[in-house]
Image (cartoon, rainbow, N blue to C red; front, side):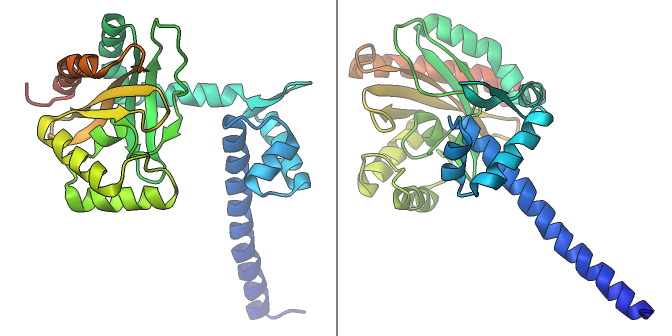
Length: 267
């Protein structure tokens, strides 16, 4: 018969083993969901993207379908499930910035006929799009609500870090450049551009994130004066030459200011 000490040790060991295993399963499940969100449709594609074995991927995907985090359609594959849609709307309703900004974004989109974005900083993944209103022009902008992009090559990303200063900008650029995400500008060119943007309160994306796509961004501030989000007007170079970029600056800044005032910033 085991002694009390031996029983306690066995229980403790089992508990310590179970926690990492449970965490690992959770993280792998989230990786599967992310892979599907990125466009993977088959178990093979998900497995290759995540590095999780085929059998484990199949087991996780099946479990996620059962709880509606994923759905499976014959001949079409896996898609994000209805439960994620529910959670997404709940998260949206809990975001004061997104709810407050929405009517102003609609106004800006109507004025410009271009795609309008609302974004916030996600320290681990660059920026995250909180809202998007499509434009009326016959173009497709490859972004989505909940999608992520780098900071350095997007106008919304630059607008979000206007207050950070040169040392932080330099660190940010080097981190993203190491991953091949900093865009086409050299470090010196990018830092010079950031200094100019910070002085004037706006930001540009001049074909830096996607060829032929240009954006004008501006920061949104809260009651403390801190930058909490940013907006941008996005179009192609066909509709947005250098002159129109300049014309959009005061319009985008004015809308960002209206949203900021609603969040408690000084008028």
